[in-house]
Image 1 (cartoon, each protein chain N blue to C red):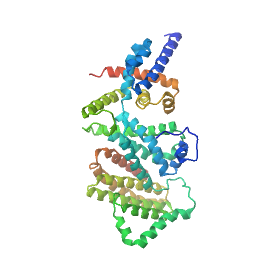
Image 2: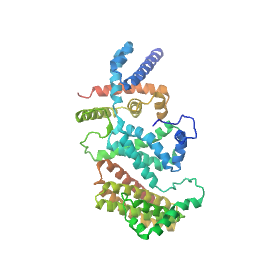
Image 3: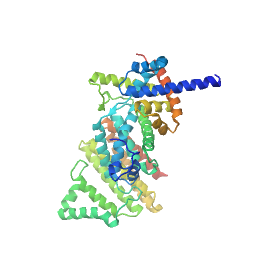
Length: 196
Length: 253
């Protein structure tokens, strides 16, 4: 489903600006929430998955983000896609922090590799290898500063361009460029230390 | 480092960043690191260090399967539709008569079709076809209560209903169904607390005396449920526990 927000409004509800959907969501319109969910869930899921790994936990937390959004939609002032995503990602960061705290108290790990991802890896062995590769990278990301980690996730894992990343982080595109440069260098040094 | 060297370093990092950006797009489209390096030979050494990191970061999380999105979207929609319409902001309606029309019509149908149907619906669980009848009854009931105290009492009743459903579903070995009731129970309890905090002191004491033991019972049931649901649902149960504790703390203040 293409993202809307910059298209001209028309009489067709499917072409309504995103601001209209957000306004209707504030009034508890199920269709509006359906729309926002369809737009936002894949991105929130991938944002969370980049931090804790894709799979059922990320799916559950992404749902929790929208449950939290449903409770606090009245406080949302954004009228565009960047504002909506920034708000959802902020809720997601709290959920991720809670999840990691709970997980630290329950150190058991599920044995199954990440499930039901749209992954081209054809064999279970390749899926396990991909899962391990992602775990190594996630571990390395924890060695970055919060800002550096956000740039890596938003820019490279989620594929956002500089303009969007700058809007989501409240910084200038130039500042994002500098952050990116330092983040990539730091990440490379961290990955070089990982034994093969 | 003097000012001129710092500027040059800044310009170099800007240039390499722009190159990395264009390579990022190409790598995402299936190009290889060496194909990108070939177009920028002056930066080959640095690109061979940075682009493999970019490639790995791009594989950090795959696209979510459409089936996962759809399943989750349907679940969330069901939850939104089950919530009370009044969330503190006015809902645009044609008038109060139309607000009553749906539930009144449903009540008439229930009455003329036989009281047994309504009674049978009372003990249903969310996976039952009759559950929608129960929801109509509850929606009708909400219309009749106006003051904060009356609404709080009503939500306490709903929370007790949901707790009963949760416990029944657990006994029947339906932990996923129990989770749905748990979410409804949490919502009703939080609304009950919201309304209680708006009541007069004397009313509030009475409502607190009902709510706080109810919250403790709910927490005990959630603790048991957390041990039985599939692992992917445990975080949401724990989150519900946390929210109940927060609601209890709001009452205690």
